[in-house]
Amino acid sequence: MKNIIFFLLCFLLFLSFDIKDNVNNNLFKLILGKYELRSMDYFELEIKPDNTFKYIREVELGVKVELEGKWRLSNDTLVLNSNKKVSEILGVIERVTEQQFIEIKVFNLEGKPEIGSLSAFFEDTILRLETDTLGIVRCNYLEEKIKKIGFNLLGYQYLPVYNIKDSNATNFIVTVKVPFGEGGYTVFEDKKFLFSDNKLYPFINNELNLKGMYYTKMKKLVRTHILISSFSSSRSIRYDFIIYRASAQKRGN
Image (cartoon, rainbow, N blue to C red; front, side, top):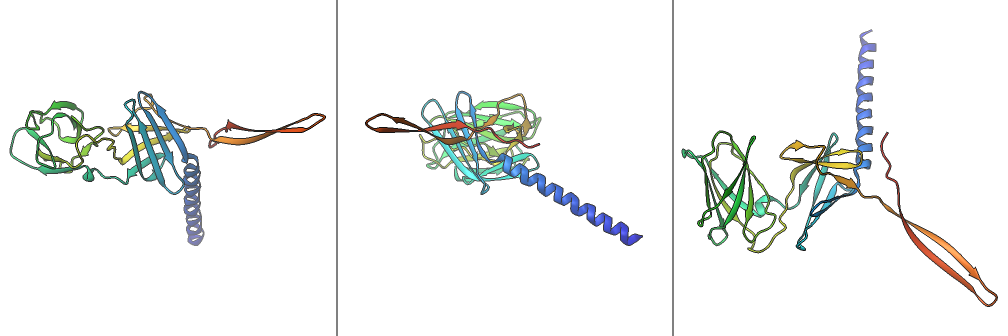
């Protein structure tokens, strides 16, 4: 009797793994393709079969951001990690001090201050802060732990958000490693999207808003030939048209 129960348990366990593998394989096939999002800017995201992706962002000023990296699935969530890392663009020294305020200093590679605004992301609060002429920001808000720092510096476009490593740190020295005047430094570090009904819903600050903007899967263009022949008493004329039509996307059951 014990042997029969053991056999049944093993069979059910094997069956559950087999069902899970089939679900994952189906999801893998469904998620492949190109997606787009049209707002003030244009966004395009291509999910490739070799677990790589290509991301494009085009803005009105003619700036084009391109990013490549690896993707993986976590249940029905798409997770992206770019080849480019934040550490290649921003060098940050975190310090735990006794000071009763948060201090952020921003410099370039020459040690000169960078001017602009910073976004301090706390657990439930986001503060917009302006640097002084020395590239320094001080904030007396200590009710929550600071989680991330965003940068909107004069002369730079799309600097990445920095995720703080030590939750107890209150003093930060930031070095911008890229040349002044350059832009397009988007970086994905565990960037998440929910995949549902051929749409990708981005997580914003680890929160999902199904009523917000989302990427829709682009329809494939299928090449179709139409041959039309015309005959006259003197010659035969052949017209060969090529028509591209949008194919319907297959959906899972």
